[in-house]
Length: 57
Image 1 (spheres, rainbow, N blue to C red):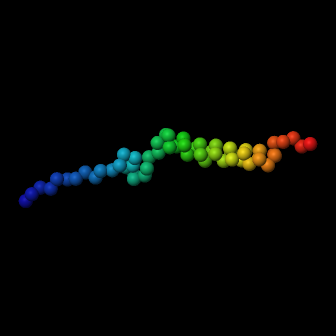
Image 2 (image 1 turned 180 degrees about the vertical axis):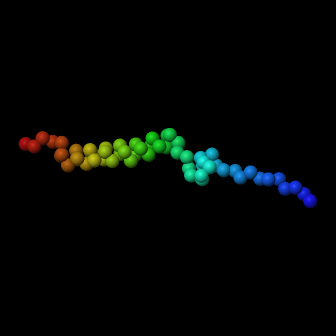
Image 3 (image 1 turned 120 degrees about the horizontal axis):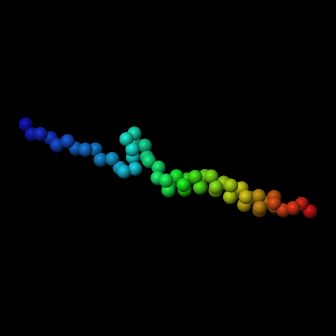
């Protein structure tokens, strides 16, 4: 009988023990900026283009 070598399951670096992807701090900052600050900037540009901040007169 020949003994079989046990093969370790190789998992990628960015997966934790539950199989979910880990988030890098850099990725989290980019996502927060795009979805947090991005819409605010777009709203300001839209309001400026429609003359919302101009004084009535």
